[in-house]
Image (cartoon, rainbow, N blue to C red; front, side, top):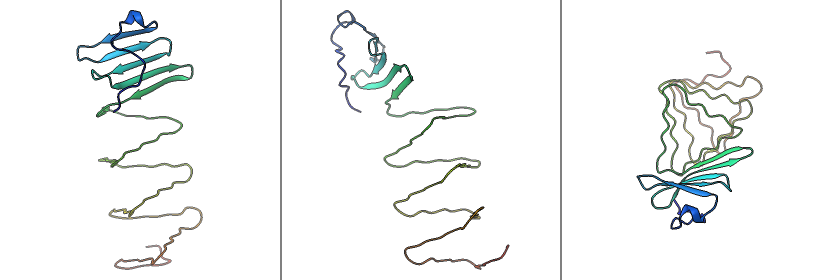
Amino acid sequence: MQKTTDTFDFSTTVNKQPGKSTIQFAAGNILVIDEYNNELKLFSKDQVVQLVINIQEKGLIVNLIATELNICSTNELNLSSKKINIEASEQINIKTAGNLVQEVKKDLLTEVGGTNKQIAQIQKITATLGNAEIKANDYVKLDGESVLLNCEE
């Protein structure tokens, strides 16, 4: 986390900064309300920005900076947007005790820098229209108890 480069001076009083007001919480956090920039900022006691809410004509822009973020829903969690980006510097885990369903209306591209492994009790690949293609820069290896070609089993 970076210290803010905001021009708000915590050492001055609210009266000296027109259009800006503050609320200080018992934990030391400070909420700055900036009427001129249509913005609310929550700072930690160390003056690090934790939350920014920018009010614009097109809608709200919310930025949340936290050490850890937990969202818990007892029923459903729904995300809806034109575009969703998820990025992790180390790892992403998706777990379910039930089924995982992916529905893609157009193409699906998965790029893996290392090895791509799919492990299941049964693997099924179906091309409903057109070819099922396997291309390798080297050998194509099939290892099974039986390798059956052109059969319905």
